[in-house]
Image 1 (cartoon, one colour):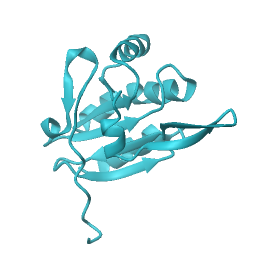
Image 2 (cartoon, helix red, strand yellow; image 1 turned 45 degrees about the vertical axis):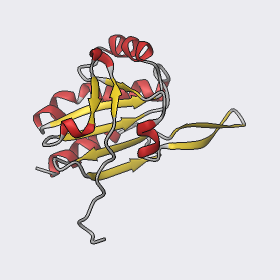
Image 3 (cartoon, one colour; image 1 turned 30 degrees about the vertical axis):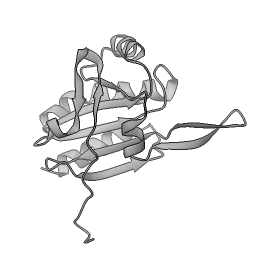
Length: 155
């Protein structure tokens, strides 16, 4: 594989807030940010989601859609979306279809116990449906700005 070849993002069709389902193949032709996060209403996830909300207009002006994904239910997502006043949709991946396709499920230590959960990860998908860049084990502060800078660099 040459240095310029990026893997094609695995397609999925999953339920999202706002009553629609989101399918990656239907978003081709535009840039997409998918950010996977562990759980609605937890401090890190709330901060990260609020950062994407606060930069949403800049992502849109760069021709990019933003979607948050976790294993939470649609009801939980609808509440989280309303609480934070989100201008973008949250995708429910209760069956872990997208999580497995993007390899974000990891064993993590929580309070001394091994638990299976989502590793905070962000993927930028280009207009051809390929993964242009990925961040894994994301630390929230400054992350959204890095993602936005990269999206803008795609032109």
